[in-house]
Amino acid sequence: MTATPVLVILSAATALGLYLGLLYLRGERKQGLVALHLLLGFGGLETLVMLLHGTPDGATAAGSLSFGKVAAGLFAVSAFSGFIAALARRSPVAANVLLGTHVTVGLAGFALVLAWISAV
Image 1 (cartoon, rainbow, N blue to C red):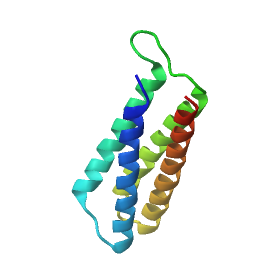
Image 2 (image 1 turned 135 degrees about the vertical axis):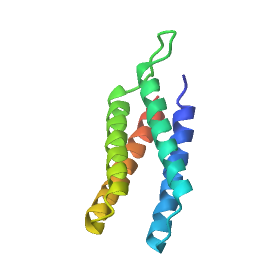
Image 3 (image 1 turned 120 degrees about the vertical axis):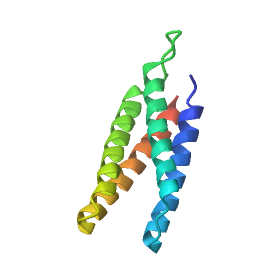
Image 4 (image 1 turned 90 degrees about the horizontal axis):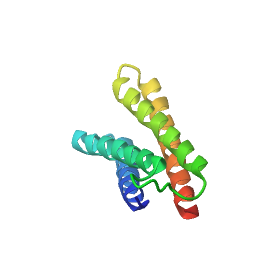
């Protein structure tokens, strides 16, 4: 399995997330795009974990696996904080803190994926 599907899916999730952040700052919210961002994010995390485990023929991903494992962990934390931020509508301050955590951790995970793929 090559790293191309991981890169494409996670790049699409990141770009859509940045667009959603712009809409959030404008005071708009589009539920369909939020759902697509959620699906792309979880799909990217799943393909990343599949790539870390290797292919059925026994070939494993080359390069430093620690970057890939840390990136997967960061994406899991980002997904959890984004999900909780969507549920925390009663407290806008808590929701904004969780959303900031979601963005920061997600972009850190994406940067690690780029570093990991460039080393492969």
